[in-house]
Amino acid sequence: MSHSIRLERFVEADPLTVFALFTSSGQWLRWQGIACALDARLGGVLEVTMPNGMVARGAFRELVPGRRVVFTWGWVGHPSVPPGSTTVEIDLRPEGSGTRLVLTHRDLPSSELPLHQAGWLHYLGRQAVTAAGGDAGPDPGLGEAPRG
Image 1 (cartoon, rainbow, N blue to C red):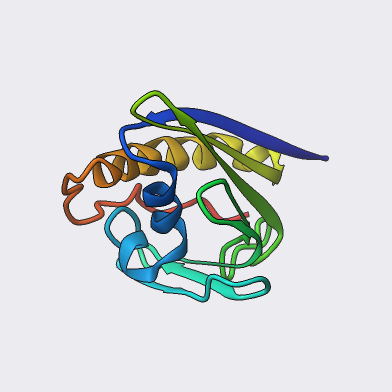
Image 2: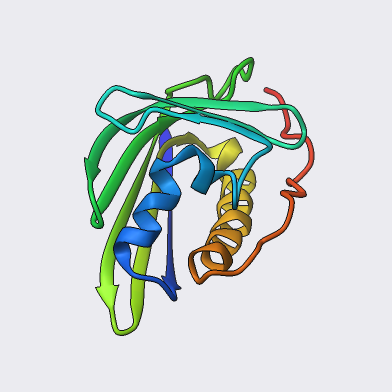
């Protein structure tokens, strides 16, 4: 059985600025990872190396500038969440002076919910700082993810 995480956050930036943080390697690295390769087109690869050396890999499935980004996600060498096995949906809605970001991470095994929720909460906080024009600093990561 697969499960989902849904998180909402207000970001003090316009939707196109937030969209760029999910679709440009240089922008993504400002808030997550120590290396990143993104090919932001349908079917294009997404690969992020985390500070602990783990590599997340997936592919872009939907791109609507300023509104929506959907990509698959998983971990190289991870038996329960392999590359491309889960789906992350990012919806962006204009709200007042900024953007309401809604992240839904689908198809996760129940054993992975706590770590992925903690990870997204951590990284969405760093991304909000970056989107608002701040510097989130080097990515400290969350430590080693459990295997199995």
